[in-house]
Length: 419
Image 1 (cartoon, rainbow, N blue to C red):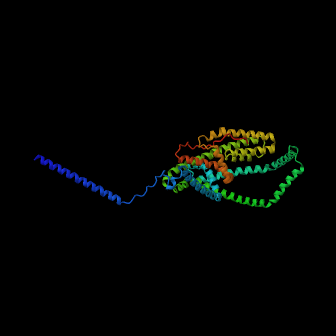
Image 2 (cartoon, rainbow, N blue to C red):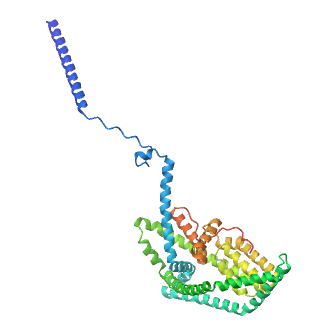
């Protein structure tokens, strides 16, 4: 009986194994049939070499060339936009230049307005007092300078005529040995050139009249803009901040405040250094009895606002006037005084008065002045360095770099060259 049960169990297991094998074969055949009925897959696209590629064609272009091309077209677009922007600014320069000058004056005079506010003077009245006082000081100085220039002009003309005669004598007796006929021919050529270009000179006179009108209108715009910059400067700045997205307002506000503080410190320090230079050279000219001591001192004061270049040019003018009026010895003494004062300015006044600062490299100063002269003449040279100082401070602030306290702005420069 036990053997029969074992036989039956073996037969059952063999039967179940054969059924399972047959079922597995049927399932496999079904899967093979379904796979045979499915369409063939599309060939896979080649893997992109870098995430910057936008199509299969980019794969064949070297990565460095793709990056260079991306930079190139963006730089071209920015350059074209900059060219059109400069052209637009050139067309409205009669408005832009007075606004920039008013901004410099506002940075200089803002502490006076704040002081009057602290002693409870209404802001509008304080602004009017500061503007009127500044205009009176400028007008008084100009009147004094022009009167001295007019009074000394006859002597200067006489000395200049004597200087021309000395030059003619040197041309005849010096190494050139020019004859009277050659010098007369040169003079006739100059006279003929002036006669031939009379129409151009007349046009120039008309242009000069137009320039005078532009100067007067620009002066009115400077005064008008200066008043509102001093009275409503913070209100104007807040209005401009509302024109930018919300997330950009706070960093731009910090950058603008820091840049304005640097501009004010730069202008005040420059005025103080220029005043000391003008007083020193004016005293030297007065002691040496050089005519036009006050106008030349005023020229030195204005020239000091153009770093590196202005002091050299104004000192050269002082030496030239001393040479024409008082002779070579006085000119050498004036040259020595100019060099000494410039050395004191470069090694003592700037480090002491300007102190901690946003340093500007001399190359940036020279390139900025050159660009300013090309774009806007003397005014461009005047505002180039303050503009660079403001942009330097603002960019550093936006970049999150630590800034020194904006007590002043120093323009690092090599020792001033001899006049």
